[in-house]
Length: 191
Image (cartoon, rainbow, N blue to C red; front, side, top):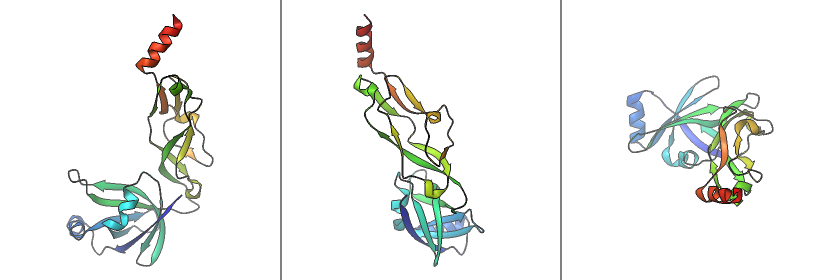
């Protein structure tokens, strides 16, 4: 898993008025929780932009006034109209405590059903996984070569080493859907 470096400085005051003042100064109010104490701090918009606007899951080395914390981005809030980043929540992680994060799904191979005229559809772009952060891959790779026309792969069918998937077992991750052309070809074969 990739590591991203972020430098922050502790906030003197918290609350709506203080947060507004920080945002005006091009700073993003942040919170680090999960450790002994909750730490309120700010980072510059530019320093955090590449971490927030990426589909990848990254481990974050937070340098808050000289002290380094290992963390992951747990949540981020945006302005409803301007889509400006308003706030980021970080979760401190430890080597001996399992953590839950969402990991992107990547499909590998050409499905049999696609060769027969079907359309491959990725239904879930991320899966929620629980485990130790050192075991997390950058992405979950699913091989779809044996997936036939009209068939699906569900969360319950997937197994990843040292990870527990927390999504509902019957949720469809990827499917090969029938297209009109595939239905027409199938009906001609049956006649």
